[in-house]
Image 1 (cartoon, rainbow, N blue to C red):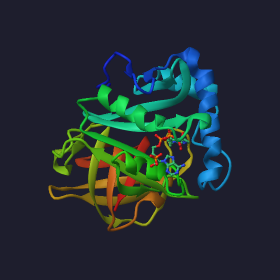
Image 2: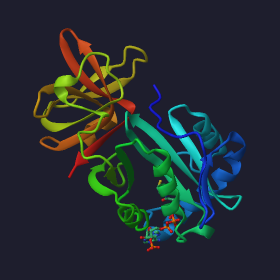
Image 3: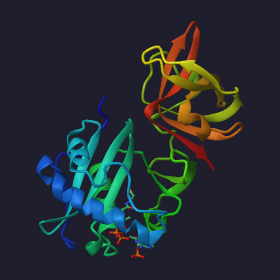
Image 4: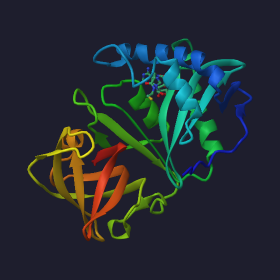
Length: 276
Ligand SMILES: CC(C)(COP(=O)(O)OP(=O)(O)OC[C@H]1O[C@@H](n2cnc3c(N)ncnc32)[C@H](O)[C@@H]1OP(=O)(O)O)[C@@H](O)C(=O)NCCC(=O)NCCS
């Protein structure tokens, strides 16, 4: 399913000569180099150690993202030069995520990141909700996103060393098209975005994977909103990301039926956000 709302043309701001244009595989090497430099400079803004997000210094990773049908990968140009990148992901109808943005350090703090967002927003004019996550320690991105009008709605706990801050920018104040209420969930639904309160968590138990024989940890929870409740099944690393009585949003969930019971799971590309 592609829910892209992107217009097929490139976007340019004449005064600043900033353009965003869809990236091509031939751009992967230079995009990777700008990305590597940008994230390596995180050491100056609070990073606990060297490195960056997955694949940030890999030409292969970037080439695959450029051709991935669920992502729209853009190059940011100044004049004719690639000075950064912007990866947009689809989360559902009218719901886009900034998966990654970066600007080559030589061009930082000149308004290019801000302009790139404006150009992207112009292209995605029918979107009603934008979201993104960034590390809590990042002294540069947190003020950057707040300046752009993003509001922090929660925290994420994908990595055990540090938490992430999750931001969104609502364009429309209607209930987002991409979100479900629990009573509307049904068998075989995928790409589910849903919010609710965690009402109970079982003790962890261990089961063997039918496919690989691997030992897996499993916890059952109940997720409730003002319409209904559903069993939420948490596996392995997902378990430590959810606490009892917290309000959470699940992105990229799926619904399965076991016997006559509906169960909500979180896919391996999914995300749990603990709402503030
Ligand atoms: C985050 C990033 C894309 C911002 O791009 P940029 O072109 O340098 O940002 P802009 O010049 O448009 O800055 C806009 C505003 O963001 C804030 N900001 C940007 N850099 C900042 C910094 N180092 N410290 C504090 N605030 C900062 C400021 O409010 C700034 O406005 P101002 O200059 O008028 O004060 C860039 O710093 C970057 O590539 N960082 C490394 C990669 C990264 O962390 N990407 C995001 C996670 S996916």
